[in-house]
Length: 283
Image (tube, rainbow, N blue to C red; front, side, top):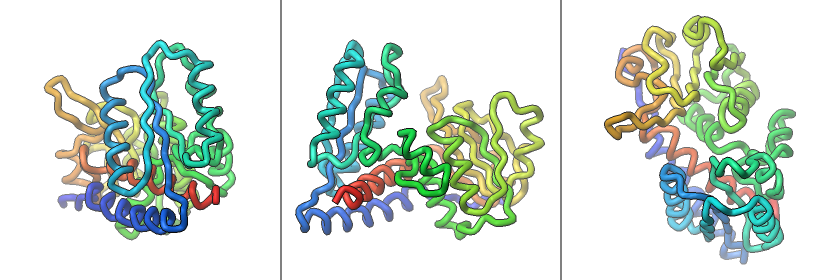
């Protein structure tokens, strides 16, 4: 068996086109979507991510404002800028690129964003809404993963066992909640899980989100499983790879996402979709 690829680039293109159509319709009614992106410091990976997000906004007809600040920016200065953006009616979504410099409290910064403009879905109000099954903004990466499952016909996961490897607030926890809402029986694994392979081999849907290169091998995957690789790791030779040993696992799985070209493009597409939803909510 060779797994079928879930092409994140092609699927993201589809969703970005839908976003562009909605953005044009909103602009025609006098509500041009606006997204503010804040980058603090000079982390190379963050600079690439931000550049891709801003470019995607422009292509979708979303007005974007990129604000870059030195790593020496104080927390009070950052919170004041967020407060100003909260009050700006031309800005419908606010994104603060993570990670932040060590002297800035990331959770305090996230909580400063108005929940209705928190298009990353990280604010405690949005996280709580997701927990009780009334999501306002779904975190972009798990949201993209669910769209990928939808694309291959896995919308109803009742009777399916989903295993999420990773427990972050950004991916692991919200991913588990979204899978649970879709009817799956969900297991969350992490660095302290004993006999990880025992759990992953039971997964009909396996989501890897731990940030360890090629951690998930072929012997850890159930034949025919859907494998969604959220990881993106840079190897010593400069090449990118996921948390899944792609070449080995594709011979066992039924469906698999590549890295790059899998979950990453869908994350950006869902950011754009959340921004469009923010306009609707605010008007």
